[in-house]
Length: 69
Image (cartoon, rainbow, N blue to C red; front, side, top):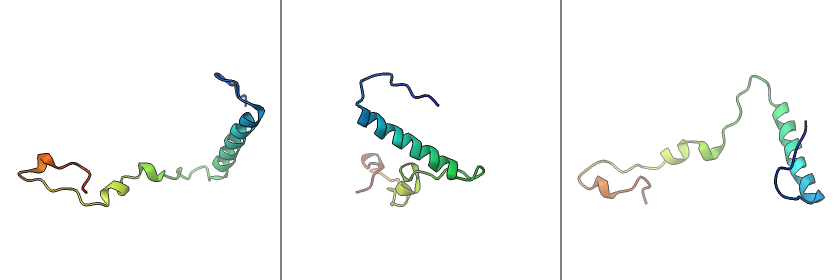
């Protein structure tokens, strides 16, 4: 595997930190079973929004936002 710095001039410490993160992610990815789906990120989980009550339609529904307060 080859890694190329396209822009900027990282210090040796910055480059070592970036490579440590890449290596740790590669090790974590190889530890997963090959048939197992990747774990979902909680940020993209729709249940974090759907858990709240959504405003009901009605005469003034146009004035309400999607995010109930």
